[in-house]
Image 1 (cartoon, rainbow, N blue to C red):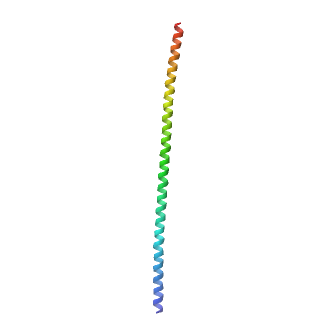
Image 2: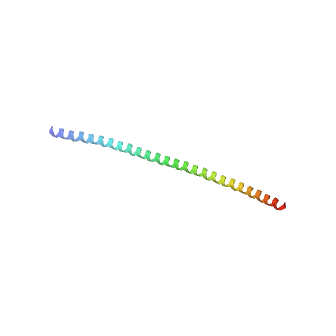
Image 3: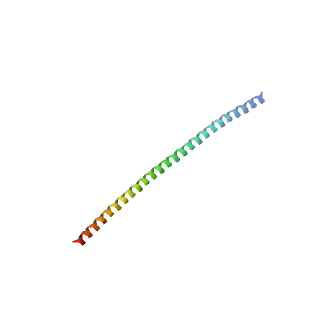
Length: 92
């Protein structure tokens, strides 16, 4: 009888540890999945922010190029007018 009680106690203890081990394993897996999801989301957010920053930079570069082209066009017109005025002055 005593032997049966000891064996039963060991069996119940092993079953309890097994249940705890499975639960711990499940919780660890869930935590790992949550961490992986957080890392993926952080990477996606960083990529989106970098993409937005590059878009803004490209827009500013385009704007600067357009402004430079307009300034060159205006300078060309001004130089042409100056030459015309100089030519008219010489003809007088």
